[in-house]
Structure formats: structure tokens, C-alpha cells
Length: 73
Image 1 (cartoon, rainbow, N blue to C red):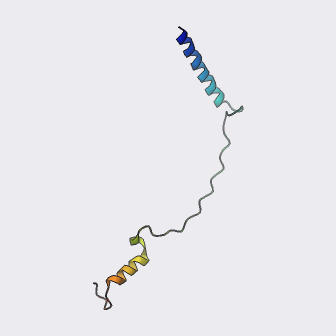
Image 2: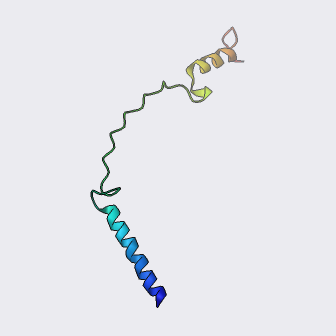
Image 3: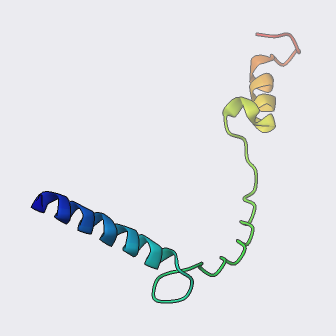
């Protein structure tokens, strides 16, 4: 019987605390002020992610694979 009374009191305390936290005004309760909008991040310069995405690398590779007479190695 005592356990039941303690259980009911515990549930009532939890309900009251939840209501107090949700109530507008008062300490720590209610709605928070809206966040200011984020400023956009500055764009970093795009660069090739892999050697085969780099046009300069591809040109150098093509130049190396060709002989002076223009035929592929």
C-alpha cells in the first residue's frame, strides 16, 4: 500500500515538473527566442578531387605518353 502511494506521488511530481517546464514565462520555461539566421559559409575555391579530374594533370600525362613524332608510346 505504501509503495502505491509513493508511486502516485512520484507520477504527480513528474507531471507537475513537465507542466512547469512547458509553461510560458517563469524560469527556464516557455518558448525560446528564435535563433538568428545563419550567415552563409564562404565558398572555398573548387579544386580537383582526384588526379584524373585535373585538366592540367591530364594534359601532362598525354604529353608524356606521346613521342616527339606524335605517335603514342
